[in-house]
Image: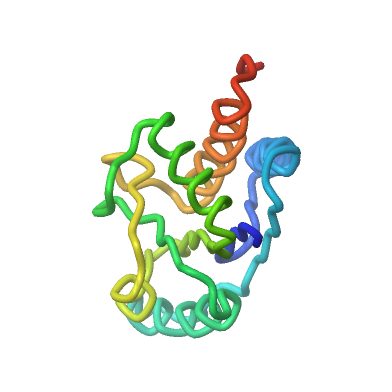
Length: 150
């Protein structure tokens, strides 16, 4: 059983990249976590770029359950997210969280997936990855009933 975060590209901003790395590192204290970055799509046609990225994302997900991070997804409070994470761990289920690129996720990824809302707003994909990493860490502290250290 493992959790995986599959995302498009790397954070370009060094401050964001540093925070993402820090929270992903912290999250690995609580969950077996793998990070996979796929290459961004190329071109000016957003639909074409999403299709290119979707193929790479689906391949990186393998046979695991996919949780697509999308603003139209299900909103969970941190406690409910922690319970869900613990349930997946107890069920020994491989789960892959998918964060799309600058143009979002293609229906090829969204349609067969569970969707998770990270915020009601549309977020830049780099910030979506940061928020997901922080919530993975927070979920671990909740499950273990540890104080959250800022």
